Length: 77
Image 1 (cartoon, rainbow, N blue to C red):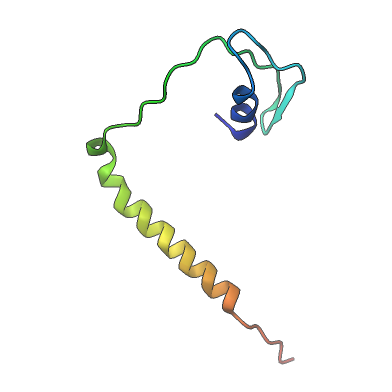
Image 2 (spheres, rainbow, N blue to C red):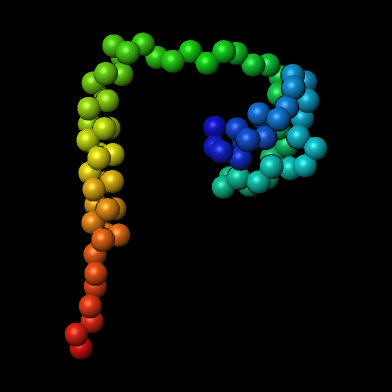
């Protein structure tokens, strides 16, 4: 779910609906919470192959961002 949906649903109890329309990137919505279920994370074995590349990408993004923040750009024209 997109963030506006999750924020709105977090405030609802079973059977309730949003009193005001919820705006998302897809338009406006009235949301009704019919039921909930516990969140069960996937087993480690099914996601472990993705963890290494995800961590590496995160570390590279952080490093590039630190370089950008530390960069001093001079205009010599």
